[in-house]
Image 1 (spheres, rainbow, N blue to C red):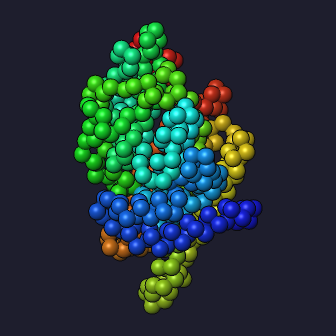
Image 2: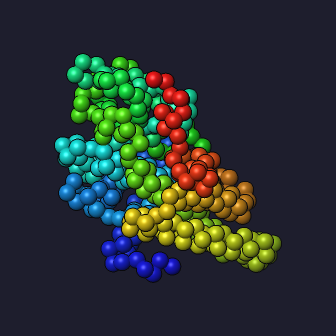
Length: 393
């Protein structure tokens, strides 16, 4: 499968396989149990050029396409879906948002440091009043003399160890017009605080937690894109991001499958090979078929995305369907491990937990199915903007 890959894509996949096996796999259980990614692994990821994989060469990256990103993420997710998921934020969502919205000065200032792994970035949108329903968000940016002030709080900010934060919030310009913008906030800014990390079911080691912004001063170079529309003007970054996260789910399920297949082949049960039990062999065959279907769905759309030909809402189709299917596969395969499967020492139950986390993180499946329904019924795949929803003026 994927016999259409070019030489560069194959080389990147081979690199990712080596990195995953040598650097990630030995630490995968530790990341999950300790809920922390070792600094040594982050440094190795930077050494392999992973943070700059999707960043253009003129800003210190490799300029790889989204197919390559998905290949790399899938292989790493086979070892640690949590670490792969954290990487997608650094590989795709944050740098691509800066690339799309930023001025040349902002791109030159931010992207080389991001590509080298010297300054990690975080993307923060969710709020207690509503995750994707931005009309209910309370974090606001207001004019303040020749600059701005931002107040509010955010939930579930992944990579809370980051130094630079892309914060989505309601905005008001100097003329009194309201909108939804993308604001760059530096960790060292006065009034900015990273609150204690959350303990999570899955996707551990990604340092997810709330952030607080108390009257934080923002200069003009901290506004990414138009102050009224920046929060909506980087859809290409979001589309690429959901494809990368679908690749994480695919790799998660494939990693669980590979470990389960090896386990079943080796284990004796009731006096014969475990694989001879008909229900188990059926479950394996069914999982294999679903993985093949998900891989075809993902990479056909990744190729279309790279050619500016992906149909509306297909990113959401990939994210929701592959995410849900991955959880279904992992749950079924975990059953085949019996009591060993629920022991942390075997390192397999984390796949099921990570798969479930991926059904919620980066937009819950229900949100993505809403996007798909809007496209089918109204020809508009996006969720409502604040102005469309009676947002506060």
